Image (tube, rainbow, N blue to C red; front, side):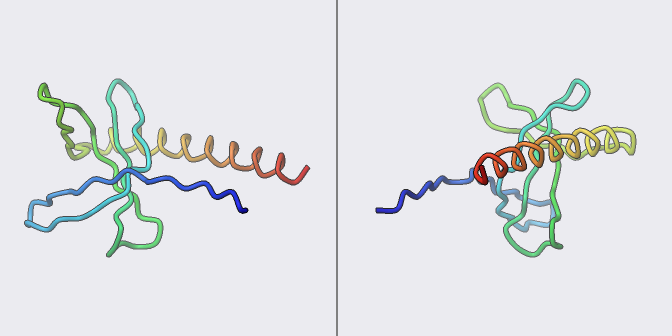
Length: 102
């Protein structure tokens, strides 16, 4: 009998300003500076590897609140933090891959 690991990737639906709805997989919640951000991967109609990143907060009623990144400085800070997060994932994946090969 094969052991198979399965899990559900959390998803969120964005309601865009033009009325379009976009379903996205949640990649990560992370901190940059003194704010929280969410990285999303749209399920369709995107360029290969495109990731959407928004400022993330939780309202008093417990619902998530997403806001656009408003400045170039904030974007640079968030992009660097997300790149570092991806580097950490890659290192962890490489370590796990080496352990499997041994």
